[in-house]
Length: 421
Image (cartoon, rainbow, N blue to C red):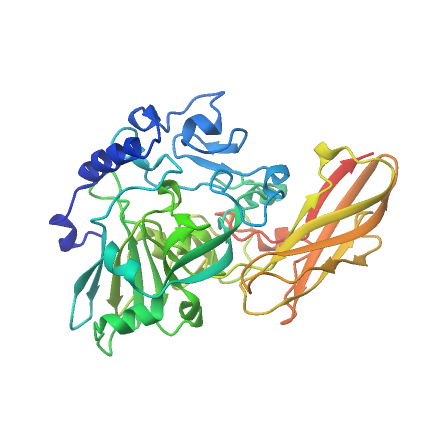
């Protein structure tokens, strides 16, 4: 999908050159001038994305796809930019290396186009956004493919084989979406029932699809959405979608469009492959061979919108090498924010017995809840398990494989960690 308004704006290559230079001005270092996403064995995460911590788990060096080891993730209430997982779709060596950095892009001329079925199309500048009311949202940001590798117990699916580190708890700050649209008085027509957010990043070939995601205008989740300008109190890093990112708390990461460049009112969802084919879940259970990755349509599947309820064990991990006897099992739990997490059950013997964990209040409805429980470990193998439940009765399935799907999205099976004593 290509919009005519983009033809009169800076090109992808022009932006790359300008923002790459801006990165150097910010002290990002000469790494922005090299092929920052070069593939190759033995490349460390800090070499792929300037400013990222060393030791991240790399799933795709060329695309800069990496997750956070849980031993690193568990140290912080708000996941710092150095450790937050990374998932990009269109990095290309050379002209797009500018966003291979945790530095913020210096783009004072950035603007967002409001267009489509509206009476008053317009461009809103970054400076205008900065003058508007700013609010904060603390929410879990999670890749829809987080946990994909666990589906391999039934049949492996294509894509990065994420463990549980494709998530983080982040504080965002920006302009409330609803009030922003009202203030702009764009006057959408009665036929406009969808809002599509488009990112700046575009495919390398003319036949490719722009990155765009659509939301029904009546979706209550938009009431909490913001046009974010800051992440953890700082301008949003380039690698995480700066200078402007749409944040919809409680929604999977792909729905939180990076490099926000347009908000389009329409009568239908975007035809972008990322909305109509990609990042979708079958409407019912499927088995390998029954439903293929290219079988998705808007009629037989749904987008990966709100988080499925989930818990993740933070400690002990296998590398902690716990001793026999008393141990504290800790972790986090979260959902889409529409209901409180009411319980987390924990087992240290593979599900034979369960105990209730103590749960700390979350910082916001969309943030993660810290929980802990005391248990005894025996000599040999100990299978730790955790299962969260919320006030709506939603809980994690004991067998996450019942939600197997050919793209490996939305894993939320009971978490399992085997530790040896």
